[in-house]
Length: 412
Image 1 (tube, helix red, strand yellow):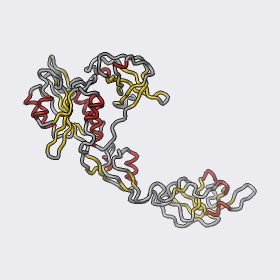
Image 2: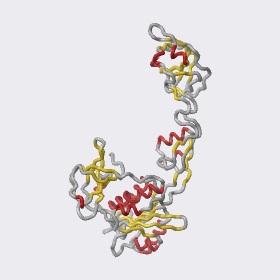
Image 3: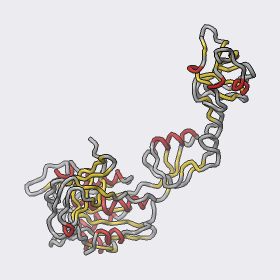
Image 4: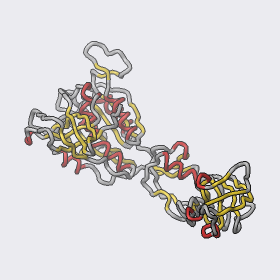
C-alpha cells in the first residue's frame, strides 16, 4: 500500500496535454492560452490626455509670472476624445482637452482644470502657476503600456476578465486555448440510483456524481455524466468502454475488496494498465489508478471510493493535479496552516480531515470539523478545505502547523 507521497509521485509528470482549439474571446473566461500572444500594435497608439484640463506649450513651464505667481494663457481651441487635433499649442496659448483625447504635437503637459484659474464666462482666458507644471504631466505617451511586437500574454495564462479586456483592446476576437479535458463520471453499485430519483428501500441517491462534476468544472474540465451501473461485469464493461473515450474516467464505488467489487478487474480487462491500488490514508484507502492507451488517445482512469467524502478528498489530492497538467497548469498549492484547537484522530493511517481554512493576521488557520465517517456529507458542507493529520504525531495541539489544502472558496 502506497503512502500519499508515493501515490502522488506515481502520477504521470507530463501526460499528453489537451490539443489546442480556437475560442471566441467572449467565451474565453477561465480558458488557458495554448500559444503566446504578441501585441500587434502599440498601446496606446497615440499620446493621450489622462485628465480633463488644458494642453500647454513647453514655454509655459518657464513663463514669467505676475505678483500672484501666475501666468496668463489664451485658450485657442477645445479637443474632445475621439477628435484629431486641429492645431497645437503655441507659446502663450493653451488648448482645452478632455480625458482620452489625443495630445497634439508640441504639448509639454496637461494641467488639470482644478489647478487653474478659469471661468466659463471667459473661455479664452486661463491663468496657471508655472511652478505646478512638470514636463509630461498627465500625458500617457504612445506605447507606454506595451509596444508592438512585445509579448502580450504567454502560453499557459488563464484568461480572467482583465486579460480579456487587454486582448479586446487590440481587436483580438478569437484566442488559441487548450481544449478543456473531458471527464467522464461513472457511478457504480447495485444500491445507487440517480440523485433525482426516489430511492427504493435499501438504495441511496448518488451524491458523488454531481459533486465530482462540479469539481471537474472548477478544474477547467467538461464533465460527462454516465448513467449509474449495477455491480455486474457485463454492465461495467460496456460503460467503461464509453468512459475511456474521455480524457479522464472517474468511477465511484466497486474498488474495495468485496465480492461484488468488480471495477479493478473490468478496468484491466478493458486494457487499462494499473499503476497502483490502495493508499495508506483515510478516507480514500481503496483508490485505484491506471492509464489506458489506444493509438494516439490516452485516458487517465481513477477508481474512486463510493463514499462521497472519500471521492472528494481523492479528487482534490490526485485528480485535480492531473487535470492541471493536461492544461499545462501548475498543481494547486499545498499550504501550511496553524490548528486553532487540539485535535485527535483515530487509527493508524494519516487522515485528511475536513476543515475550515481562514486567514487571520496574514496567517492561515485551520479548524478541523467533527467528521465521523466517509459518508458524512454534513461535515463537508461547512468545510472549504482539509488538513493532513498523522496519528503517529499525536497529539495535535492548537498552534501546530500541518499540511493543508483548499477545496474551494467558502466565503458565504
